Amino acid sequence: MKVKANKLKKTPKRRDRKVKKSEAPGNLQPDEQNEILKACRKLSNILDPEELYAAFADVIKKKFAIRHLAIFLYRKTADTIELVFSESLGELNFQIKKNKSGLWKSILGGELFAVSDDAGNLLFSTEFKKLGLETLQSKLWVPLGMGEELVGLVTFGSKGANQPFDDADRYFLQQISAHAAVCLNTCLLYEKRQKEKEDLDKTLQNLSLLYSIGKAMNYISDLKKLLQFILGQAIEITSAEKGSLMLYEMETDRLDIRVVAGLEDDAFQEKVNNNEIKCRSFKPGEGIAGRVFASAKPIVVNNIKEDDVFVDSDASYVRSIVCIPMVVYNDVIGVINVTNKRHGKEFTDEDVEMLKAVADQAAVAINKAQLWDMAVTDSLTGLYVRRYFMVKLQEELLRAERYNNILSIVMADLDRFKNINDTYGHDAGDRVLKAIGKFLQQNIRDVDVIARYGGEEFVIMLPEAAEDAAYILAERIRKQFAELKLENFPQITISLGIATYPFDGTELEDLIKKADAAMYAAKRAGCNKVVKYTPDIKLVGETNI
Image (cartoon, rainbow, N blue to C red):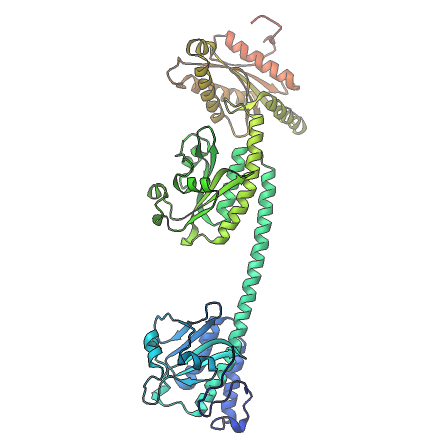
């Protein structure tokens, strides 16, 4: 923009910043010139805009006993000047849009100008009344500029004791304001560079974090652990209080909550994650999560009470939420939900972008884990298949041999299960097996591995468990199993046999055969028993059962 010279008498022109001593209004004395120089040096050492505003105001107050002062910044993108600092004016909020008024022409003129005459009458009364600028209680306005670029504006109230500003005062205000404009421009540039550096550092940090998350996902094959890891990372990177991860079940056409995190009730959270408590599921399009699933687009709601699509906001203690779809091969497989940004803050666009990046990686990892899960787990009981169990058992035997550890095997078989199939049908038998698989999974340690060995027979590997520890676990399973209610079917019991490495054998097949023989010994003893292998027990095939 072109800076025009102001017509005020005796006001130095902006293009001639170096005013000669003989031209300085009132012929400033050396001490006054030193005062300007000292003030300029003070302002030059400040890089924080807020600190600069206060220091500039302090210089003016001490020099002229001015009570009312306001500083505006020019926002080029919005073409407005915005109030950023005021002195003794209370809470004000001004944004003055650039226009063709006489007031703006004076601002763009670049020189100090009066906004009221000696009698106190406003010279720009129409603009002042329209914008409410009388509250500034100003007498003089000084544009803050760098060359032809407008940086801001400063307004000054009455001089102490309501004395008029003389030419020397105006000269001082013009000169110190000109220097303040340079310092302010430097502050803003420094602030901009700092913000750019912070943004770059944040971007690099985010990229590093995403790389680490993606790398970690590749090493987690267990689906539940993978889901918990993904959700934990989503909560952490967004500084949320809690969250949930939902997967789409094609058979039921619903979104089911698979894992939750951040709940205050740890016991309840653990039960949800172990599928002991069934949470509400959602149809595609139902609620915010259902809508995200159906549209494959993220949704952010920073005030949940303003969105009537959210279900049970009061019961779930949700204030704000971000829902991100997980998409793989153009198919949405689930939704990541994080809720309640910490410290009362709102979720940002950066949070959404980071979550989208995590969700993209998560979708691929989850899809891979689901395929792996299908390959190694029994579709009916949800337990591992026999083939995968044998691989895990061989790995654990090698580890036990290397570190001189103990390991036990428990073979389990349902007693008289054939009666269920014969009496109620195979569909009923399948429902019973499914319930039993869930029961067994919930009653072993996290380090244990359980599989469906075949039919109604199961096998459990207990790493670092001696014979007595294995017996205690097996006996607990037997007792609780005997009390298990399975719809309206007759009570079912279970027989278990134990073999321990290295005392009962060191080879995989040998241990399996001996645990199996002990289990059949429990059946011969009347069923619903736990038997530890001993050398006097004949292996299957060596005697008639």
